[in-house]
Length: 141
Length: 407
Ligand SMILES: Cc1ncc(COP(=O)(O)O)c(C=O)c1O
Image (cartoon, rainbow over the protein chains, first blue to last red):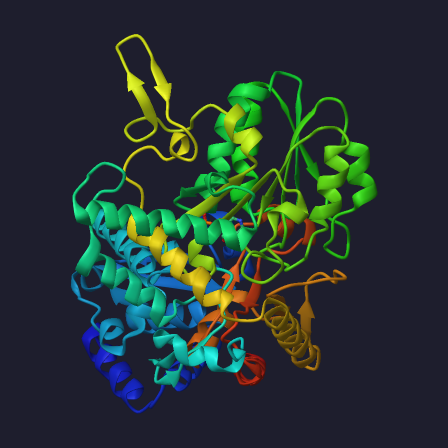
C-alpha cells in the first residue's frame, strides 16, 4: 500500500496533465464515479455532514489503527472531492491521516473552488476525517 | 438621442476579465449587478476631491459634499417621479428599508389581533421582518400563497383583506421566479381598505417602469447595488403623509433638532430617518447610476431586456430534461431551472469552470422552494449589458455539463 505522500504525488502528476478547469472537473467527476459505492444502509443521518447545497456521508471504521471508510455525496462534484480523499486516506494508518499535510488540493487550486461551500467544503471534510483519526488513535491506547 | 443598449457592455470594466481562463459571462445580476466606469469614477473622485462630513460643516468641502449628496437624492426622486425630494430616504439597502418600516410602522400602527399580509413569493428580506414584527406586536402574519404557475391570485388576495389588515408587503418582481406581480392592482385593492402597501422593488426598479406616483405606492424600497450603483446604499421611499406619521427608526446625530435631558424634537424629513453619518460616497454613486440608466430610452431598455429573456427561455426549452420553474404570464430578468438528475450545485460549479456565473440554491426564498417541492434551482439573471451571445454560451455550457455528468 503506497503512503499518503506517494498517492498525493501521483494525483498531482495526473492533474498536471489537465489543461483547464473543465478537464480537471471531468477527471474529478470520473474519480467519483469510480469510487466504491457506499452501502445504502450506511447512508444514514448519523453519517451525514449536512451542508447548504449538497449532502455528504462518511462512514469511518477503525481496525488496528487503520482507517477504513466509505463515502458518498448527492453532488457529483463534491463526490469527486470525496473520492480524492478516499484515494488518499482510505486504508491508511490513523496516525498518518492525522500527521500528513494534504497539500495536493492547494496545489491543484481546488481549495479555492470548493472549500468556501461551508460545511461541505473540503476543509470540513478533512476536519471530519482528522477527528475520526483522533478517535481511532484513542481507541488504540 | 438616447444611448445604444448594445454599447453598454463596454462601459463595465469588470466584464472584460477572464474567469477560469474563459471570458466572463456574468449572469448573476439578480444578486448584484456590475458597475459602469462612471459610477466607479464617482466613488474615486469623491474620496480624491470631495470627502467631508455632510450637513454639519460650513467649510467648502462640507458644503460641496452636502450638495453632491442632496443632488443624488434629487436624482433618485426624479427617477422615481416622487412628488417631493424628502420622500426619498437613504438607507443601506432593501433589507434596512424594510426593517425601518417594520419597526416604525409596527410600533405605531399595529396592535394585537391586527393582520399583516405578505406573499409566498417574497425574498426572506420582505418576509422575516414582518413575521418578527407580528410576533412582537401579537399580530397575525398572513401569507398569500402562490399558484401553480408561480403567480399571485388576486381574487384570493382580495378575500384576505379585511378591516383588521394593517399593511401589505409585496415584491414587484420575484427574485427566484421572475414573476412580475400586479402591484398596481394590489395597491388599488388595499387602498379600498385604507391599507398602505410596501413594494419591494429590488428586482424591478432597474428593469421595469419605476414611477411611484402612477403606481400610487405608499412605500417603495430597493438596493443601489442591484441597479448598477454601489453596495451599502439603498432607498426607502415613502409618501410624505406616512413619513410624517411614522416615528424615527434609529436615533442619534443628524435626526434631531433640539436635545435636552427631558426630551428631543426630531428633525424634519428626510433627516428624521437618516441618523448618523450616511453613506455619502455610495449615495453619490447611486446618483451616478441613475444618470447612467437614464441615458437609455426606458421603453427601449425594457423591450431589449424582455426580448433577451424570451430568447433565453427559447434556448433553455430546447435542452432535453431541463425543467423551467413557474409559468407566469409576465416575467422579468430571471431564468430559473434545473436539469433532471443534476444537482443545481454541480451545474453552478461546472458552469463557473467555463467562466459562466450563475447562482444556485434557494435564493433566500425558502417558502417558494417549499411550494415547488424542490431544494433549489439554478438561476441565470440578466442585466442591460447581457446579450444573445451570453445566453448562447449559457445554453451550450448547460449542454456541456449534461454531457459531463450524464453518462
Ligand atoms: C426581491 C428582493 N428583496 C430584497 C432583497 C434584499 O436586498 P439587499 O440584500 O440588498 O438588502 C433582494 C436581494 O436579493 C431581493 O431580490
